[in-house]
Image (cartoon, rainbow, N blue to C red; front, side, top):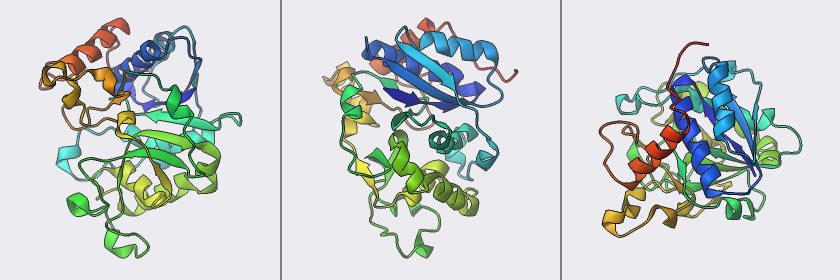
Length: 277
C-alpha cells in the first residue's frame, strides 16, 4: 500500500502519529511512504519518521520544486491554523515513481483505527480521486461558496463538495486530468480569498469527476464514536478531527481520540516541532 503525507516542521510530530496509527492498524501489511517535507524539516526528524513507520514500511522523501506551492493561505482568520504545507499535496503525483499507480494521501491531523486494505481494493471507475463528502460544507455553494463560483458557469452550485484531508489518488488519471495544473491555476486566481484553499481548488479541478467514498474513510464527526456515546473508534477507519482545535491542544475534549493521539505521540519518541535544519 502506497501512502503519502506532506508537512513542514510544525506538523512533523503529528505526521509521526499518523504513521504510527497506520502501522498499528495494519499489522503485517507492506507499506510504502512517499513523503514531501518542507525545507525546515531537519535530518533527525526525517530519520525519526522513518523509524515510526514500522518494521514493514519503507519511507522515501520525494524531491520536488516547492515554488509552485508558495501561495497565500487565504484571508479567513478562523482558518489561520492551516499550514502553507497543505499545498504540497498537489505536487505528489508528478513526483512518484512510475510503478505507483494508486496512493493514499492523509492529512497530518488524521488517525488510522482500522485496516486500509479495503480502500486500496475500491474500483475507482476511471476518476482521478476518491474522497468523502464534507459533512459541514456539503455543496459548492455552502459557507458562502467556493471563491469565483458565480463566474464558473460549468459548475453546479448544488454540486457535492468533498473534504481533502483523505484522498485516494489514481496517479495516472490525476495526471491525465491535469489536476495539479488546474488546482494551481485556480489558486493563482483565488488563493488570497479562499476559505479552505487547497480543498476549494481540488473541488474545482475535479468537479463532477470524483468518487464519493463512505464516511468511515474520513470520519469528520468521530466524536460520535467516543465510548461515552456508546461507540468505539474502530467503527471507522480514519478519524479526522478537522477544525482549529486539535488533539494535541489543551482545548480538545478529553476522551478516546485524545488518548489515542497522545499514546502514539509518546511512542513516536516525543518529536517536537522545530524550525531549524
